[in-house]
Length: 203
Image (tube, rainbow, N blue to C red; front, side, top):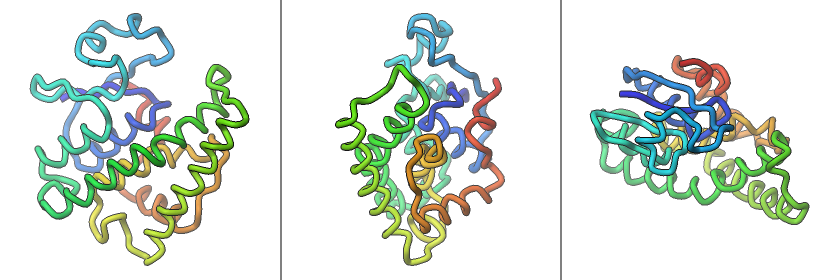
């Protein structure tokens, strides 16, 4: 198994963190996502449909899109909720929610602050920021009952999906509500956790 990613990709971080937390053996290679897509390493270009990270190659399967990869890992390796049909149903619901909520607005807000080429108009920034506040507020309300993880007592792929870009919230200069911050703190206690810049830094 081999994962391709980059330290600036919260989507690649989701997958790498899941693999580490699940103690799933894999190789890892950094892709320079700041090069033109056809300038990236040939083996990556040949196997990644959209030439984007993350790409996971698992027994000749070329798997793309972070949440789809998380579903594959959970089901195939029976980890992070993959051993329970009920947990997988609820986790899948959160993965679809994340893709259209936190995963849509937070990466753009962060890119606006960090990379000049991704500067947004004020109107676009305002819209995304309001969306983020609403979405992170929904997540905070969910976690306000004190549950350790998003689906209860067990760490699942939903936690990896939802947290991917929230570990970059400081770079986006957006607030993280208390219950969400406490949940992120619990994720950091997992032996597989390292900051994205460390976890995804080296081949």
